[in-house]
Length: 184
Ligand SMILES: [Zn+2]
Image (cartoon, rainbow, N blue to C red; front, side):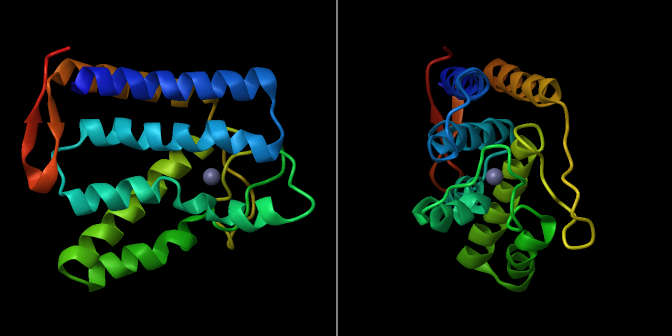
């Protein structure tokens, strides 16, 4: 089961990036490829982590798309950004500081959700560093967008998929229990 999930996530990322590169869709359409690839990237990380609680996992997957919340008002505006425009201020470490702070100041469920969401946002940035115009991670100290070459990201997701597939048949599940699936 883990192997199927890992290969499915890898296929999602590579197919999305192939489409983004080859078709160069308009900004409003690019999210249909990019957001599933963000979730798939986060899922590949998740498949390689020790088992986490449902709450942490839910926070992590939500956090993996959270920095793109700024797309919602932009999508509703009359003029859309260009796919080559720099990413906005939600894409910096400072933007996720409140989540990290909340995770250190709370207990129980709020702590698990916020800690997961902060980690998920980092997974989001990991993809964005390699796709498009990069990420202005150090804003407001430094407005420059940081980038890593796409092949570095592609190699990382392939390694994560291979490692998860090699671990085989157990998926993280409710409250730390494991779901035993086929070794396929
Ligand atoms: Zn983003």
